[in-house]
Structures are given as structure tokens and as C-alpha cells.
Image (cartoon, rainbow, N blue to C red; front, side, top):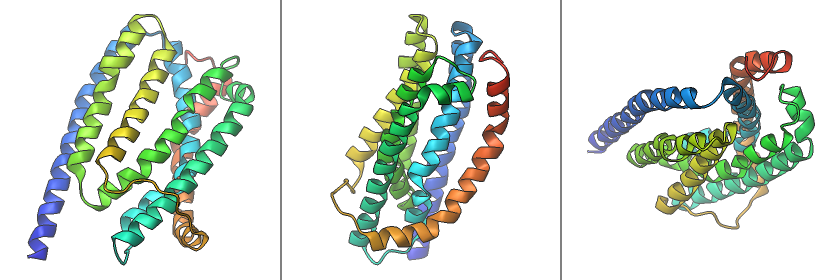
Amino acid sequence: MKENELRNKIFNATKWSSLAEVAAKIVSPLTNMVLARIIAPEAFGVVATVTMITSFADMFTDAGFQKYLVQHEFKNEEEKFKNANVAFITNFVISIFLWGIITLFSEQIAVLVGNPGLGSVVAIACIQLPLTAFSSIQMALYRRDFDFKTLFWIRMISIFIPVVVTIPLALLGLSYWSLIIGTLFMQFSNAILLTMKSKWKPKLFFSIATLKEMLSFSLWSLIEAVSIWLTTWVDAFIIGSILSEYF
């Protein structure tokens, strides 16, 4: 019975996950094609370098806790939720700290990545860091429970946000701001919807012992994430620091 139940969970998880990926591969290129006709190449260059910064900071806010929550064997639901609280509070504190550092040195960071004079853009775009602290833990718990159907519908909303938010703002002439606002709106909706539908809600619980145990597992995941980030973004960093936003 348990074997059949597990097989059904895996089948449903694969089905909903595949549908989400197929929809993303169809809708995202179409919206990008429309945006490319409206927005200048320089705007995409600005957003690319901003994304490079936020993705780097996101690695440290998550600190590999997602994999820990998905893979670790918990004694019961209560222990799982306590670990989720520790991960969430740690993520949130780190994200606020990193956002503060990025805001403080936003102009220097903007120059470093090839966007001089756009420090305010970098600081505002990084508002998404605290928002992802909400959604990343929730997504890990959904994946652990094989609840990919909920993640599918959340993904669908995210996919269509550019259609209802980014494209209209681009038509109004907001350039790279339309892309940044669209991303922030997507992260905000993810955080709200995932939390509303989740059995786990953030609470004021923290344990140093639990954090140490989680970090002993997550450290290697963090190192892996940094290496993946380097291979993904090192070319954008070189181009951004040497050439203009257009390139």
C-alpha cells in the first residue's frame, strides 16, 4: 500500500513539475520577445547585472537550508516545523543584513558590475532578498511533501506576471524599472500565496543547536551553489565590467 502511495506521489509530482516547465518554456520566450520589441537592449543589460547581484546574495540567504529540509529525516511534524523556523529566521536575518550592505555600497557595486550611477536601482531591486526568505522555506516544504500541484499554480501566476505587470509598465516607458518591478511583484506574490496555503507558518522559535546541525549539512550545498553561480555569471561580470549595458 505504501509503495503504491509513494509511486502515485512521484507520478503526480513529475506530472505537475513537467507541466510547469513546459508552460514556462512556452510563455517566457513569448513575453521576452514582446519586451524586446518595447525595451531597449540597455535596459536588459541593467537587469542582467542586477540579477547577477541578487542571485549571488540569494545563495547566502538560503545557505543550503532548502536541501536540508527536503532530505533530512525528521522524527515528527513538530521537529520539521521547528527546523523550518530556524531556517526561516536565519534566512530572513541574513537577507536583511545583505540588503543593508548592498544598499550602503550600492554605488560602488553598480560601478563594479558596469552600471555606474545606478546604485539606487541595485538597492531597490534587492528588496526581493527578504521576500525570497519567505518563499524559499515554503517551497522546500512543498517539495518534501511532493505537493508539486500547488507549486505548479504558483509558478503559473509567476509566469504570467510579466503579461499583466511588466509589459504594461514597459509600454508606459518605464524601461528597466518595468522589469525590476515585475520581478518584485512576482517575489511578493510567491511569498504571500505560498505562506497562505502552507501548513507551516513562521513563528518566533530559534535554536542554536539546530542551526549548527543544519549548517553542518548546508555548508557543502553552499559551496556547490557558489561554484554554480561562478560558472553561470562570470561571463556577465566580465562583460558588464568592461563593456556597456548594451552589450
